Amino acid sequence: MIKVRKIAVLREVIEAEMGVMLERPIVRVAGLAVVINPVAGRHERDLSAMFPIGRDVGERLMPELVPLLRGPAVSYGKAALVGVAGEMEHGGACVHPMLGKPMRAAIGGGKAVIPSNVKVGPVGATLDVPLGHKDEPWSFDHFDTMTVMLADAPRPDEILVVVALADGGRALPRCGQAPA
Image 1: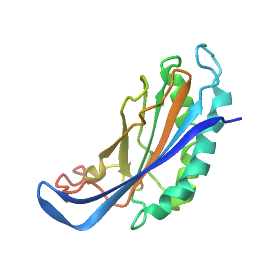
Image 2: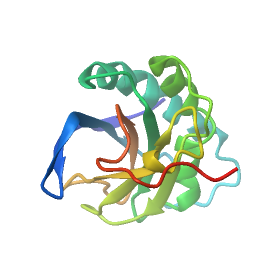
Image 3: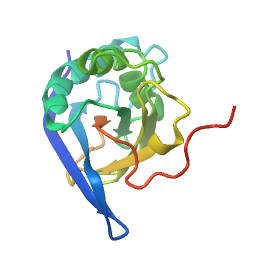
Image 4: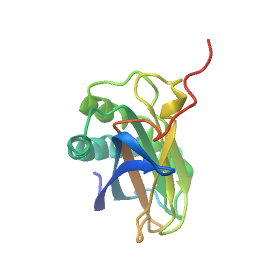
């Protein structure tokens, strides 16, 4: 059973970069769930009981995030920040096995692997959520990052689980795609 202490939703609208106004603003959104780490302070060999945390977070947050974009989701990413009484694998158990399915369901698919990041950190640490194109894994112009944080999370026995979407790539992309 997932125990959520707090939910937060962040929305960024990027209208200009380096003094250049964009033709179309880019919207990035992130849903953050602060969940109790059921194995904090313990080394468990089998983390499968934690897999549903990702599914539950995705099912809860994604329907709220998609309408906040101005256009269809083009990029996506996921991440976890584990409190200091936990380990990286606890975050991995939340974001890897089951979180992708509700993310793809909410945006109508996604052929590419969902970029992810997991780390252990103290309360108030920042977390860089990598973003990548949902269908074109080699679209360099969509390699991006959304940095998130909550001032009071994660506490030592918590995990901050994050899902992120964008309706565009970087603001002024000029890298293209990998050469053939």
